[in-house]
Amino acid sequence: MSSLLTRVKSKMSIFAHRKARGMLDGEYGSVFKGRSLDFDDLRAYIPGDEVRDIDWKASARHGSPLIKRYVAVRRQTVLLITDTGRNMAASALGGEEKKDIGVMALGVVGYLAQRHGDVVGLVCGDATGSRSLPAKAGEAHLERILRTVDGGTGLTSPRSSIGEQLSYVARNYGQRMLLFVVADELVPDAGMERLLRRLRAQHEVLWLTVQDAQLAGADSATQPADRYDVADSRLLPGRLAESEAVIRAYTAAQEQRDAAREAVLRRLGIAHVHAGSSHDVMPAVFTLLERHRRGK
Image (cartoon, rainbow, N blue to C red; front, top):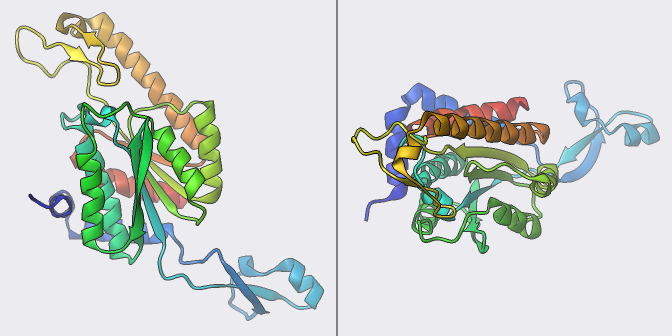
């Protein structure tokens, strides 16, 4: 059985030359500024210290500027969150299964984290519940994470609900982390928006959406193939799928969903990108990290 992580690293080598990989490495390193959130003590201000580190209230009481000092933290925790419901077994825009793109994205971010000495954990599942793997270091652990996602996703899986996985994180994780979410083309409703607002207040959150396949245009046969929605097994006969009116309506609805999702995530200050194929993942992750660093 071939290693999924080896496959990820191989694709990273193919899709990005050394300079681009170095830029991606640097962009990941800039997400965490190396500043612990755990307060340690105060000391006298020394010229050259960051003004933002001055504790103005303590300085006023003391009569001279005092600087906040923080406990040094060597490792950050990256929590990979993904949907392993049946939606992720559907075809993506580029023709692959969505889970293959998800595994690639999780592998890239997990590998970057490992290279920087960070520990990586996983929360995955479907509408019926979630499972987790604790945050650890090492490529063997990352391989286990990728195999858990790959082996746990199929057309016979329960229905998808990334909200269940996000709720699981909110209930069970108190330590500040970097959350990397890989999900289907969902539109967060009011309840999920409240949940995301709560998570965003406590954690760094990045989001990658795996794009749906196009409704039509992929078949060259004279008899168009039937389509069906893996979420509820609804059938769309091939002739209807090739109808211009149906395609226009489907495209318009998809654009509305995309705009609504983007609006919610932008409102919450969550950096977001999309990927329709494994080839899109490397540039998408770079863009995601850059947007997060710039707060866009």
